[in-house]
Amino acid sequence: MKAQILQLQKNKQIQQKSNQILAAAAAAAGIKTGSSSAALAQGRTLNKTNTGTSDLSPAAASRKVTQICEICDASCRDRDNYRVHLQSKHNQLKGKTATDMAQGAPLACSRCRERFWTYEGLERHLLMSHYLVTSDLLAKAQSKTDGCRCKLCGK
Image 1 (spheres, helix red, strand yellow):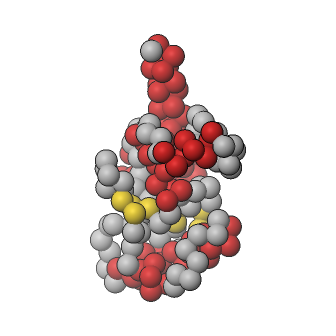
Image 2 (cartoon, one colour):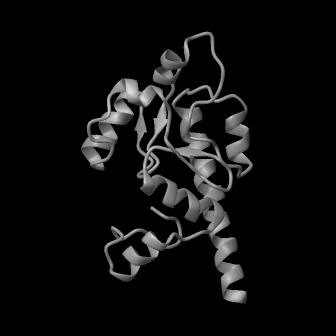
């Protein structure tokens, strides 16, 4: 029991450090994130989907926001590049167009309602944010087909 508690504490520390690194990277890149930088520095999770308001239309605003890949944390300069990244690097969203992307991420976390484009991104979020392991991820780990994902940080 103590080992599990220590592991959960360690996972939370890793997540907080990761959030601090993301906030520092965003600040270094000159990305205006408003209160999200402060939230990241304090260890709170930043929602990866663009839900803020803007003077631009929703479709135009979403294309202007830097996108962070929910699978590998790569930074893409806009939603169109993110779609291409998911298609080419992760073999995800095949056949999806910019119009499909404008509709928003289809998968939602059942705990916090954060939205994701891929099942792998949702699995990673569940592991990192809520310390939940899906049956699919467990089966992949047991059969050693989980892509050698780190058990501590989910990367």
